[in-house]
Image: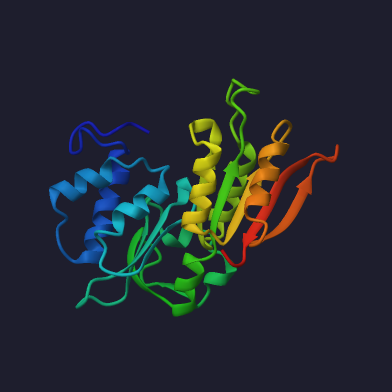
Length: 242
């Protein structure tokens, strides 16, 4: 996609995607978005939903969710007092009727204008809960001193995409190949208290996986999946009392 070169010359997103994002926020707030807030939102790459979620928390007037995959990103936002219902926006610009909605959304997410990408609508109370939880953290472990050349973490990326397609919960990824230390990772888990932690641990990372499990041994429920050779490649851990 071409980068913005006119309306938003310093934007980090495609100009049409950025225009849709601003229009969606203004639909929810019922007012023009100040230039400073527009500029801030447009510096967030479309591939960073959690950063976008954090930025929108100081702008949108009520409950909201940024969900779905990159090519099907969905913003659902409770509208400002005096406005009815919710804003439901497909930030990719596709009509809502073109989306393969998960079965659980039936009677929980109601779109007023399904042939449009931006519509009013309603989200049932239990639908709001399903959009928000579980909070999932997917982690890729890494020993830079043993594997100096980074490898793309296809495992957690595939899991994240599959999970985001369900529109259930909020998915975060942390890759130790991108400068995150093991202590940083432990701190993130302790601070954010995710409901589910999925850990990709391949050859040469058994010590990190063991240390992670021992650190949270009192509050983790563990499920381990392995490859045909018996090497644990994914350990899904659920926080039950942190």
